[in-house]
Amino acid sequence: QVQLVESGGGLVQAGGSLRLSCAASGRTFSRYNMGWFRQAPGKERDFVAAISWSGGSTYYADSVKGRFTISRDNTKNTVYLQMNSLKPEDTAVYYCAADRWGSINSDYAAYDYWGQGTQVTVSS
Image (cartoon, rainbow, N blue to C red; front, side, top):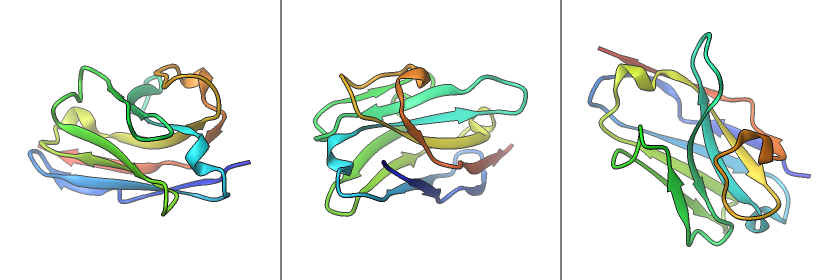
């Protein structure tokens, strides 16, 4: 069992930056692939980025490629999402998720555990 708690969201102007953190409980964090997803009001939950258990592989949605960076520190049981050059369309609730099995995945159905989310609002 893994419990996930996101932090770091807030209000930022377009072009600004934020760094989200996701702290995980449990001693098996390093065995999980991790992902970030986001959901805007009235829209489906969309994939943002994923990272393998070792940190050696990453994968990004086209909409954030070159602007966002996912990373992890297994000694701190934490995964990060560095978001640069933010746009108003990045406004959403951001969720981190843990996937115990297989390769890194962009399908939300593959993830076993979810955090409660953190709001990111980008003003124009």
